[in-house]
Length: 192
Image 1 (cartoon, rainbow, N blue to C red):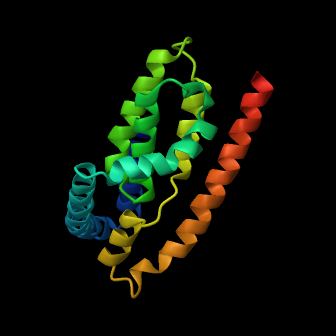
Image 2 (image 1 turned 180 degrees about the vertical axis):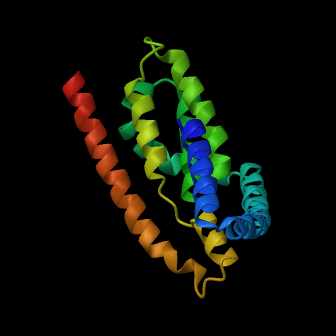
């Protein structure tokens, strides 16, 4: 759908610029946006390299195992269908840890891997299992201790205090996760 909407918006913008005589402003806007995009990409690249490097160090230590053990009771509560599937539980825990640390780019492949593992045990291949629904809700809420992407964007835009977003992000993501888990548990109970 976005593949259709974006070209339409771009085309309408050019037509409006031609009609209103502001084609030079559109041209200038394009080049300044390209420059901003490159600067933002470089900022993101540095941030992503830093956090992915830290995550790689953490993977090679016992810290991931310790964090997974800490999350085990929560994972058991949220995903009761996965009692015997230790692989899926570990992949879910890794994804949650990556999200908590603000490593959305590292969390995505881990999340896809967890979904594939859960799909293997899913009896209805064309329907999401309860565990898969809960996992999607948790990923959407994405509780984060350090919202690295938002901080990187704010830094690239010369924010006076780019980290001032941390406490509001904690509040928003925790509330979103609690409401999402509560609603998902209610829906799962009603469907049973």
